[in-house]
Length: 456
Ligand SMILES: Cc1cc2nc3c(=O)[nH]c(=O)nc-3n(C[C@H](O)[C@H](O)[C@H](O)COP(=O)(O)OP(=O)(O)OC[C@H]3O[C@@H](n4cnc5c(N)ncnc54)[C@H](O)[C@@H]3O)c2cc1C
Image (cartoon, rainbow, N blue to C red):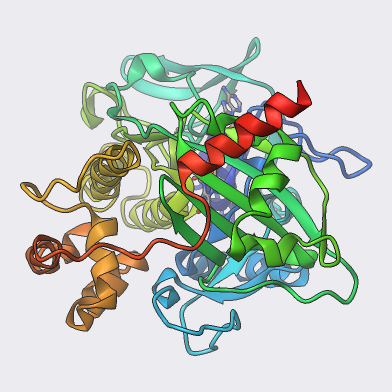
């Protein structure tokens, strides 16, 4: 096979994974990013990638993708402190201790910053990969054929250009169809802590750590590498009172009022290492990975990762969907070589069948979640959202196999099709999911109001 020259815009997980995969097949790869990577002293602000310091849970598909193409990265991650942990279907098991069962599918508990550093360092050491620091401005093309990408004032020549510029990448907008989907209406507030020497972690009830489904919001613990952990609040973006959780003092005060979190952050157990931070603009978006006018209109450009799919990150699907795409694209390029029209058509179909359903699933569940957080009753006149179907597992064990396949993303969301009418009957008969112990959204809002009144 002839050697391809490939320009990848975006040194995030999608771009780095694909770039290393192609270089290991003999291609010449240049990865363009406006971010120069970690400083000499190890600092890395990662401007423009707001999720860099927010909590992440990496599903088993991420580890599987690494083992398949980049086993050295899988080893380096564990050396860097990543902890192996089961998939999300471990969630309903009562009394789970937090320890990974080696027979399970295993993902990682690790800070996003550690994951990115390991990927970036391996790519920097990879023969066949070079980096170009700068902002990509446009795609260089002539007569419907792409021949590179314009970075600053220079054309970087390439026969294949991949736009892996993430959720906020804009430089190819004029070539693409608009996104399908909406703002999820969900926002984040998180804070990072570290266990004190000798202190044990707090209680676990889920693979990332602990998860509380409270009345009007979610609260979670992500236990990560190096004895660090993060608390995450997921709330309605329009909820102005809970937006104050970005204030570190308020964040800790609220956290100490929730039993599942209290034990993690009591002063004899942990200390905060970063201020509280917020995150919004979380979209449920699908954009086809090919030009708006179709694959045949322009050969040699494709989109990848968050540039194709973004979902409300509270379910931790983003790195999985990014690496599944990259793995698939490598396989398609293996089959079709430099026939980029054929590559585009196959990748487009695969994304349509395997990625778009996750976005549609999120749109339905996030819309329903926001309505419930506003106090509206569950709408039993239409299909239940997947989170409500999954909640029925506690009273309808026959549904667990399908629910586990959904939770672990082993099957597409339509694996819940047969379970949904059974689950809906349970709701019609009065079933409602359990709510974790802790203040309701209104009680948290009161707590915040009182705090602000005292603080003046
Ligand atoms: C708050 C939050 C929490 C999340 N939590 C999880 C989680 O727990 N688990 C999970 O699996 N996923 C999670 N995700 C999703 C995950 O972070 C993304 O899916 C993942 O980063 C996508 O990788 P990417 O390589 O496609 O894009 P990115 O990681 O966004 O990388 C894009 C890169 O492109 C560069 N770039 C952009 N434009 C240009 C340009 N014009 N020129 C040059 N460079 C450019 C940027 O600097 C960046 O380096 C979360 C996301 C958010 C927002």
